Image 1 (cartoon, rainbow, N blue to C red):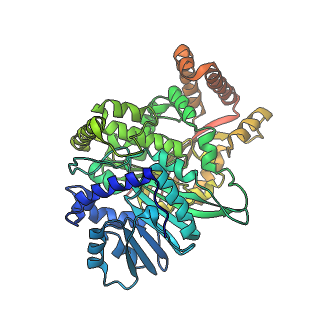
Image 2 (image 1 turned 90 degrees about the vertical axis):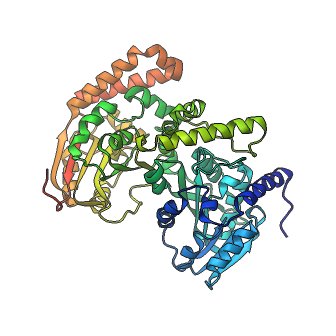
Image 3 (image 1 turned 120 degrees about the vertical axis):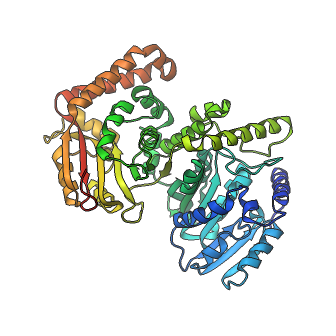
Length: 551
């Protein structure tokens, strides 16, 4: 028997049950998705979500919050067995009516907060729009339970609405927790389950990404999927590379300082001006698809999409970078929404995550959410066709010939196996597709002790310019150009340094004297190394053979 729920959880469950009693009177896709475009969205979104989940052939799948079975039947086509749970009787009955003929599906009426299942009984735990109906404590408890239910290497997948309501259905009361994605990372990263032998269970991130369908249909980056994998460690988990990035160079304060130097939305050399100057080299056409590897906080992606009418799939290994980009996208989508936009642009304020919205404050919040939703719909065609994703480009899989261009700015310095990445990029490009990269490089001579110390402290992997070109050619590219842009780099450094020094008072007020000294000292050091010819900045362009003749 499951233990009785604590009072706070009992209240949460009562509120959520009442909400879904109201919205489950008609067990339809429209009711489940709470959107007038549900039928259209469902046809595009379902295969996309399942594709993001990845192959499940022959696996045991636990589907939580299965609803009327939008995903159940599709999952059951290849899974060995599916346990489909929902806490609404009417939804389970409809799921059974639709999918009851499938012999490998077990239908259960069950509340995930009190669910008891055998240890190691599943290979995948899947949910779609579930955690947003649980309190923070309930989410944490469910994550811990999932570690027990999953086999070693098993997958935890969830998709949630973040920041604000996405569906356009009017709701008298809305107890949904539209969390900032940062909160989901904090909860899952914070769960470790000790074992009797001293080992620890925890989840490691495979990927986190926007649902492309909502970007395409609604210019909405707030629908987000996570895919995690169960890992057992004999000791506390080692620092992850994404954690190194987020806690060191790309901490929240580090990102803010970079923006103060490069300009809002940018964390790479020259900011917007350099980006505008480089983009024409890709010869982009409306409707094309671009992959940005190491997208940072998205300024260049917004610019690219808005200027050229292209779809940009932007990925970065830094959670802080992507979450800042998502917050900016959410803020831009409701720029007239006052406090909400200011909070999102400020780098982390999120909708309340504990308890249901109620009373006068709740009514005011609901009115604000509905106003924001209307603004989002009205501005839909002006918003950016950009999808953001946290993932490792060396592990991420895309179908061959998925993109018309691959773009990367000052990022490959973090990648040791550049040849492997160039090979993957070559495969992802369509015939005739173009590649543009800028990156730090070095002189062919051994680095000085000071430069070597700088490289080591940042974990960089730098090569002479010619080696980049050779690696691109080895990957199969043609029309390879490896251009030394160090003089331009020096011009940018001088301009950025002058801007910071001219605004010293404001910079120190925000980041302190130490922050000012760190940036100014770092930029002066880079200038000295660049002028000495030791640190270089390269521009690399190339084209995949085939396709239309080069324009």
